[in-house]
Amino acid sequence: AAGDPDAGQKVFLKCAACHKIGPGAKNGVGPSLNGIAGRKSGQSEGFTYSDANKNSGITWDEATFKEYITAPQKKVPGTKMTFPGLPAEGDRDNVWAYISQFKAD
Ligand code: HEM
Image (cartoon, rainbow, N blue to C red; front, side, top):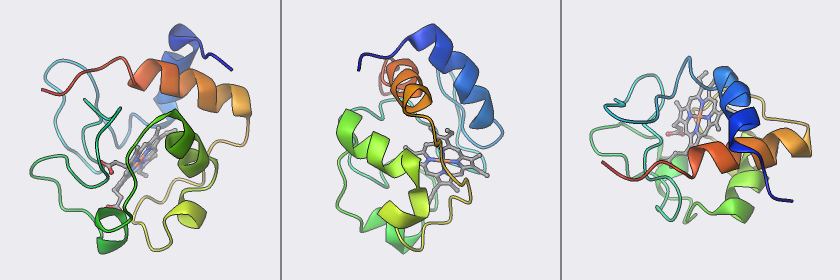
């Protein structure tokens, strides 16, 4: 289903302790998510990823992202992202609609 980016911005509050996004976003506990749509896993410059993430072979698009964020440790066993996931499909749709708007720096 098509997500609502404004609703996704609210969902992103759950991510924002670790991830920044938008103009001037820097890596923190997690990588900056600018330009995530269409990017291969593990490519935010200057961020030290786990081997599990770097070598996952994933290209982030709506389908791969939604599968990942349902249960990150299932999709990428060994990831150092300790977030348990978003159980509600609507939240997954909305947060993708939000984060996929931001282009690479
Ligand atoms: C990685 C999204 C919550 C820490 C990632 C990646 C995505 C993502 C797409 C892969 C990035 C890439 O390959 O470049 C999200 C979203 C969240 C969320 C949408 C909220 C719904 C969190 C939280 C934390 C966190 C709360 C910290 C407790 C990390 C870390 C990585 C990562 C450390 C790198 C993983 C690794 O190298 O194994 N996240 N994340 N994330 N995230 Fe999150």
